[in-house]
Length: 337
Image (tube, rainbow, N blue to C red; front, side, top):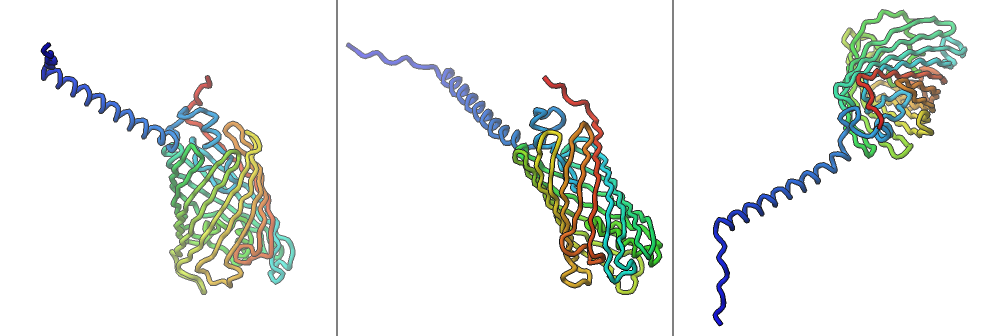
């Protein structure tokens, strides 16, 4: 019996089958690329705005308690931070104070505006200081204004990193020798921002930020340098330029949703100023407690020196600080389901 020849498939049917298989292959490839790109993006990108992530997840990773001195890196709304510090200072025994206790007060105001929520920010800072030194004088000094910009990259897995650049504008000061001694006493309370109280000095302040959050634990680091340029005639023994480095490390723990505690450690190192080696480095620690309320975050902390205070200008000091951060939401919060 003769075998039957297989039926011949028309060429047009073959072309349609090949075209359909190519379309399916392209569709599968596109889906795989979307899946490959979509998964890391959701894990690595910062939230695009209110409602981008569930409220609980966004709050746990991005809206954590800020350190008393360092900023909250991934803020969403405009903020204003006010800090008031009161300190008791022990002058050197050889000073005109004769070993009697001096008192200082320090106020710090900072306004920050997000250009892109949680990513790009601009801000302005202004300080003032006052002190009463027995046997010398009492004085109030306004600091030079600082403007800055910063950016941050964030991950919903808890890692944030970025940097910023600030400029302290030069402001002239006409102070007497007694007022200058009062200022030297008062500025030890906040040594990392001492450059804001220099006479007609332009200061550039680049820095690097990093923060990691794992569960209730918060780790935050800031490292930077201050490069100062005197834009007036030099006085006797004064340098035209000055460079110093500063580092701040914060370890925090969120006891509960509305309460966080932490410990902040600061180092300021004078790189170019003519000082003995044992007076170049300044260390300070600051334990704190912060309360997280609706649009308000008050914090209480104490500030204690470790080893030599700033440049060895005083023998020792201790201070108490009240810091309050105010948020100004620009969008209504998303409704909870």
